[in-house]
Amino acid sequence: MVTKTAAERRDEARQAFDAYFSECPSRKLLDRLSDKWVTLVLSALAAGPRRYSHLARRIAGVSQKMLTQTLRGLERDGLVSRTLTPSVPVRVDYALTPLGESLMPLVAAIKSWAETHIGDVEAARERYDVDNA
Amino acid sequence: MVTKTAAERRDEARQAFDAYFSECPSRKLLDRLSDKWVTLVLSALAAGPRRYSHLARRIAGVSQKMLTQTLRGLERDGLVSRTLTPSVPVRVDYALTPLGESLMPLVAAIKSWAETHIGDVEAARERYDVDNA
DNA sequence: CTGTATCCGTGAGGATACTG
DNA sequence: CAGTATCCTCACGGATACAG
Image (cartoon, rainbow over the protein chains, first blue to last red):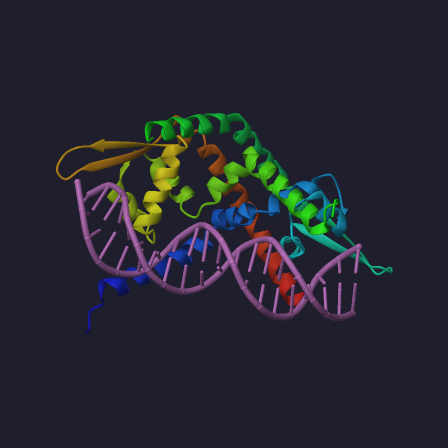
């Protein structure tokens, strides 16, 4: 068969789209921010540097795996810095970088919209659920 | 055993935290926005009402299931309206509600930060990867 | 104290087929 | 045209054990 099947064409389109999509800066940012623990870690660091164990206690519910994984990701992206003090036992401090700080107004904006409008959303949701009872 | 085991205490903490967490307005908003298709649908509707089939074509890569599911969710949250025209065949138009429109500046803000700073993030990422080669 | 390594259950979401 | 119903995969993240 010389021509492509519909399935093949669909596949190609999807892959091309996914490639384009994952290149979108806004998407990248949303993917980072949407991570369950990212905003919590950033907020916990907003007031200043914190130790690993402090973050673990402060952010109830994180598994070690997720906390470490989140911190590694943020460090890699240059949003958070990691400082190791080779005492015994070792001590590690995390802090927001300037780039990380620059993200805070955005977090605040999200918080603001949410607090202003989330009531409307909930109301709409109840209405919808009642109407479709 | 009268006292709780460490595992039990951890479990309780996690559950209480999850409950608190899912109540957080910012979290609710981020969960919505972070959905792979939500911002795309909202953007597609920014210019005016669109038909279902138009959205399906415009947003390459969406499965029917996801498009419908996304639209239902947005409708339920009062961000998008659904208008059915009972012609033959049926025609359905989707449009942003005022509430949905109010979200657009926030989407723009996200876009703006991303376009300004995503370069720094990528640079940091490369540096990190090189240093940990 | 601050991690790394491994296993494993769950659920989001894609593919496909069918309907008013 | 605009969905609904079903199956099935696979990646995310929790639990657990171990290490420098």
